[in-house]
Length: 278
Image (cartoon, rainbow, N blue to C red; front, side):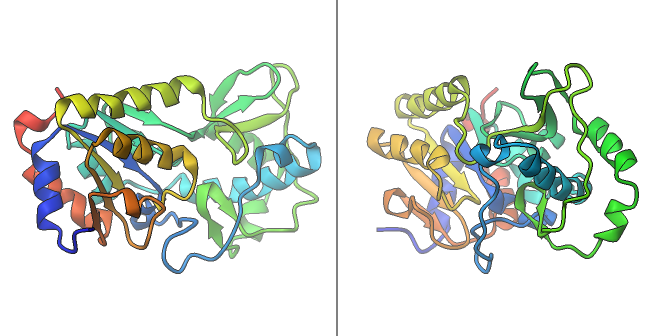
């Protein structure tokens, strides 16, 4: 039976080794909307198969992403991000691509789905910083940001925009290949090495009397839910802090209906030195 109060899950997480799994709900207080939180409209991002289908899909993606990045790129970490960075977790696994964990210097971090701040060429695999591409896009599409300033933002650096036919997308300046944000799209596999590292950390909790803490994730997609399933199978306590239901609620030892910006700083203040990863 899930706990209806927060005292017990706080005490549990304060004294034991932690692996923390974060999702989009952690970043909503930084002004980045999520896909599945309470009140979020139904929407589906572009899939990997659609992106690689050809120039038209890539034009549509980059036209919208150019706008979205201009907003996401100015987002700043909130109290939840700062708290996670101070928990002394064995590992922090984030499903977010916004780079806000990196911005506060979160140690022992795995960005499961990559970072939207990096760009990769699909042909030569060269990786470059997103700001460099933003400058090229701005030069080739002068006035684009100003013309579409009223367009609504969506998660993952996207916006609600259909009219993208005149947007100019530059190729890789090394080989002329197609550019893609260095993130895992829907329909694309998370790199095996990242998954293996996360499983290893979750497995270690069983031997150290640790806890898996889920913060701000609905666990709708298997890339995050699999770690909750693994922990539950091993008998590792699972604490979920999220507004709204999640796919992992039935597996949770405790479910806390609270905002991560409120709950995580309280936990950080309670964490004992012995529970913190060096």
